[in-house]
Length: 278
Image (cartoon, rainbow, N blue to C red; front, side, top):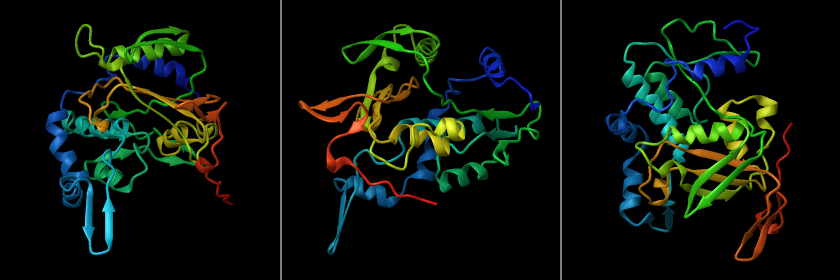
């Protein structure tokens, strides 16, 4: 890729190309066994079978019922496995680590998924050849106002500028059939507490998932609004229409008590001191 390439124009042209796949390859069931073998264990299975806890002498181990990757990461890893299954002989590249987890990245390397090298903080695409397959991330700031109307737990209207159009079309592509409302369902809500995370990480470091994805969702006082699947909470909705939007400067009340005010944590018990480094 030339150094002077207009990346925005490149992305726009790519999104309208028949070489761009956004929905996966329908191989979820085929790769499910490989994923379970790679990322589950007998210990986890035993904990789940025993009510998510294990007692051994004075040692007590408890497992969260929603233990595992968040759905977005789970789907991204599955997409990498599906891509290798769909393209068994082609060279496959990934621009960043899907998740900052050594075992996941080692498994991808064992599947001959190559990572785009970084030289001096700049990604080097010079080794990518015609016919290669590249897995791209999607992470950016929302810069325009988006107005959502929500009824019965589903988004029924998305209005605004370019960002609203991006959201509307992204969720629409998650529809499995005419009238499918699953991609528009509210998935989960939450707020961040991690003082080491920064909302400006994309501006400082770019859209590298290992830096930005967790930081954007976990910085103190943010309000996370998500659409799509709810399988980790015990539901049955597994739609691909998934959107995570961490928001700043929000006020959050729980049972009439303000816990976040204009993006600032107000309950001292929720405030974690930042660890200064360097």
